Amino acid sequence: MSDIAEHRAPDQGNAGRRNGGERSWSRVVRAWVAGLAVLGGLTVPLAAATPAAADGDQTRAYVANFSSDNVSVIDTRTNTVTKTIGVGDGPFSVAVTPDGRRAYVTNSNSDNVSVINTKTNTVTATIPVGDSPSGVAVTPDGRRAYVTNSSSDNVSVINTKTNTVTKTVAVGDGPFSMAVTPDGRRAYVSNFNGDNVSVIDTRTNTVTKTVAVGDGPFSVAVTPDGRRAYVTNFSGDTLSVIDTKTNTVTATIPAGDEPNGVAVTPDGRRVYVANRGDDNVSVIKSKTNTVTTIIPVGNRPSDVAITPDGRRAYVTNLASNTVSVINTHIKEVTATIPAGSGPFGVAITPHRPRG
Image (cartoon, rainbow, N blue to C red):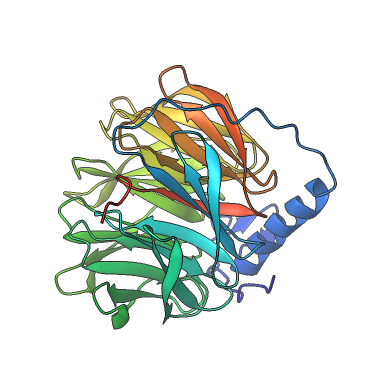
């Protein structure tokens, strides 16, 4: 695995430093690699992949396996891997189109995006983007995919009809993740080294606002009503809550150690946060912005996605090479699924595509 090009945050006293060292992309990647090396020789006990309650529309989870350069396809009815798809070098994040027909996968070490046809589970296109692509999000109308390029400090805008980059938008320092609002009008981009979030007007593809957040903003999720954006601050062990009407931070929530991925339930009532350093998931009640439950998962949880019916959360465990399945009603892990090597990003289809 090649290093992601280094970016350093500007000198901001303690804001840009953690444990006395400079915060940079290469530092974060080295930490991930070290975690994998330490745990690589351990035998991780697996719970049985017990059948899940059937979804009426038969969803699938797509998991990007960073170290094995492939994507695991999980049937969420049976919680089994039904297909493994080779993609580019260092697949990081996944986003599925609203119609469920395609999955877009960022390949951070080959500077491109793989497009998967979810009916055939084959790669149908490879799109060159910027340097070290990490996050990806698709607009609600399915017409565009936005990709954060962490080492070139910009976002590639992809026309999903032609699978070509039509615009490049300059953002902050070390953009990692992003989310698009339900109305499709704005995209929120976490700038890891800048300790802020860029707000993109998707109609003009220009940055209209920069919002200061916590230390090392990592992932972003927007509530279904579009009123709030939740941002995990990896180096600050907190979440920032942004009011999307005013684009100001209205709350800061203590999280676990090194919070990574974040997802909001379809009803907007709960927020799930994968805490990489604590090997657990925090469940936040969105009405009060307080942590109500802590759920142990695998080693180095990295991302989380929730099924369309809101009944289950799928959590990738980078150092266990597994995916934990959480029953959101009882808030417990009910299945553990073996994945590829270094599973990181995960996305779930709205349904199983037909025709």
